[in-house]
Figure 1 (cartoon, helix red, strand yellow):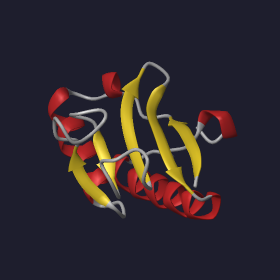
Figure 2 (tube, one colour; figure 1 turned 90 degrees about the vertical axis):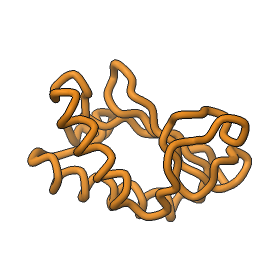
Figure 3 (cartoon, one colour; figure 1 turned 30 degrees about the horizontal axis):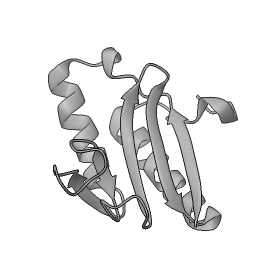
Length: 108
């Protein structure tokens, strides 16, 4: 497995707190592998959203809100990561009503 990452053009400060909570959780839940928010004592980063596993030495994805947008770090194979990223961006685009993409890839 390989360490992966991406930054998406989703900025929390562009939404009301209510809309952010509603939309982002709906997007998270609609994406393959969603587990929930990391529990204390189990996840390396409690409170952050996780997919597939709370253990960072296993296949996992986690997200954090950063000034550069919604940041994801993951541990999985390249091909699987590309599929997961496409799915997340598609779900987020449909839910938020604008093209969600990676700034580093000139998508957003």
